[in-house]
Image: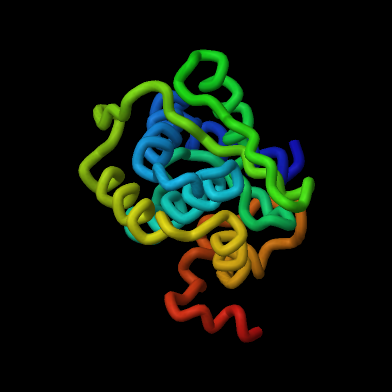
Length: 179
């Protein structure tokens, strides 16, 4: 077994994604951000910021997902599948909103089921609240730009997995954007 295969296998054992919690996080943001700015891009960034901020404080993520460095910033590997599953279950729906440029059509995330908090620890709930409050008025493009100014995205090669430990090299004042 190659070292990279071993790392991936070991990662999966240590960081199994708890689908119920993951779905609860998505429902949390869908219920909290109700100003027509919660499209898929913004949701991906909310997941990123909540996971990486939580990791920075507590040494683990909330969702347990891994993030890939893509052109629109960090994207959680499992989010798209979880969203599809939630749509099939009737927890959420996505509504396509036409934008002036067809490549920028927004896919709004709309909650169908109410928010339940039973899956979260006090610390997780606090982080989710802080993340929602901080980013509520920003759109997906602005959040993408913010994620591009952070060390985890900058230090990772395109299409590669972002190491959570890179969170310790980011700063709070956007100096990374000046590099």
